[in-house]
Amino acid sequence: MMSSSGSAYAQLLLRNPNVMIDYVEPEDPAHLNIDVNDPTLDAQSKTTLQKTIDDYTKMKGARDRLMKSQLLERYSQFLAALRLPTTLRLRTKKCGEVNAFFDSTDSSVNLCYEYVLALEGKAPKTTTSDGFTPEGTLTGMIVSTMLHETGHALFSIYTVPILGKEEDAADEIAGFMMMQFGQDVALTTIKGAAWKWAADDWTNPVYYDVHSSSQARFYNFLCMAYGGNPTAFKPYADRYLPAARAPNCAYEYQLAKIAFDKTILPHIDPELMKKVESLKWLTAAEMDPKQAPSVPSPTVKREQ
Amino acid sequence: MRTLITAMIMVLCLGTAASAQTLPKNPMIDIEYVPPKNAAYTPYYQRLKDLQVLETLQEFLAPLKLPRKISVKVEECGTQRLVYKPGGTANICYEYLDSVYKFAPQSSSLAMGDDGNNITKDATIAGAFAGEMLNEVAHAVFDVLQIPVWGSADDAADNSAALIMLQFGDLAAWRTLTGTSWYLAQKSYSGYQDFTEVFAPTDAARFYNYMCVAYAGNSDIFSFLSKDIPDGRRNQCASDYLKLVRSFKQTIWPYIDQTLLKQSRAVNWAAKLTTVKN
Image (cartoon, rainbow over all chains, first blue to last red; front, side):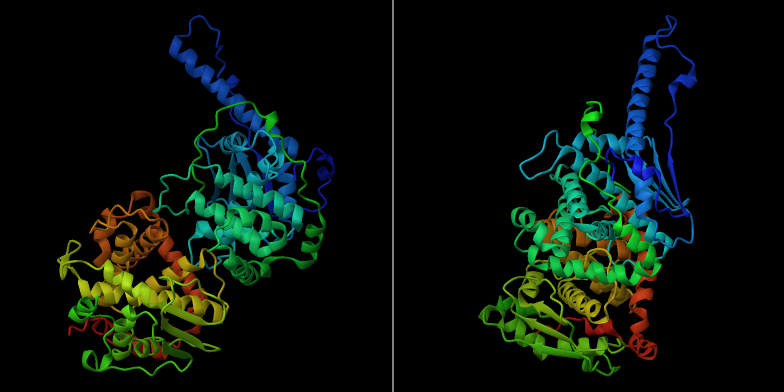
């Protein structure tokens, strides 16, 4: 997704009538009608206003880049085959926190501009020796985030049984879906997800949290990938997966497949799915983090 | 080691003296006590066999309807826990039992909670071992019944085990859940004889998972855990627990014989969890 040839996607070949998209505009401080150069403005007010303007500029920049890439339009095509009994809202917005989350009150998947900015800060500045490109890695990080939150949405909408931890389950369904659309998509998204969790600080993990540690999530995504396509991901498995984990990845992938087949597949239109699979919905071109302003990477708050 | 074992051994004391009620053994559960090569584990092997621990498990699992057989083995594994391999065999390792002994409370009885409840050395050992058996059997059940498992399979097995522990009366719940939680807490942070300050990755996360299910599943006896589970997690325990109950009903429940379950609930399983002192 998100190649520069986005215009082709404007035609929206596939569309799910129950998926709505919205790039919510951040509030423009111009509405406040205060001039930062107003000589009567005290220093503190001026600082606050300038911070608000800077903040808005960053959020608007993130929104513009997402819109230009047609993130939501193209992601919604991927969801075209889902038989949804309710409206699923895909939303980008300013949240006031670095986050992405599913909100069950209005069945919405929310990607915060603050989170996008954080991911842009996390993306590699140049292509790494492992072949992590700035553009592909950012795309993979964003799509993996969307898939994780969509996983929560599907669990909620279809009342899917979850015997383990739901946050791990959302990672699993995201990882499993990444593997269903060909090797290019798998490589881009899995590498993005792996980079996202590898770039976190692995010291002092919080074991009581509903989320697994960043380290565990890194290994979980790699394991799902290696289990689903051992050939393509062997170099990464050889380098990063512990020997004690790697042999079990095929079984872990198989467990996810059983779970997907039993709980999600009945809600998918098979004919539409064939069309979705035929789409080249994710290319290696992607978003360019270099287009983003150089801002310090904020501490990433865990997703909901 | 042998002194420790003979002084206060353990686990799932079998049936006849402890409780008159019996259930038929589940004919779809095969069991095996595999003699260890390491002589240090021989006392465990002998004691488990003498106590007919696996036969008790066969009774406990009587209500479970299985389309094909599950094999439950206690054996020397070369590690404390084996990763489950598809095929329907649940392996419980002498090494795990050895570790449970090592981390058991040093005094014979400690006060825990606000209601004068105690945690005893022998009940902790029995409870933790019962928890491990339920976890390993859950893996095999998932496999044999092709249960959809979202979330880590080991967490799913732990959650299922914890939920089952809550179903057979307060005393059985207390012994199994405090036993398991105690063990995981001590293993996570050796040196602290407490539930707090756990650090080792896998066991610490498992510890909090068990505590969360216990806290939400039986607030009468586990309300004291409120101080041990950080706010960020504790606030979600109730909704996570309810989702777990719903998920269990969607997946495992259809394979449970309700008549046998009713009989099973009448059995005093807590009494079978007492320690035999030689």
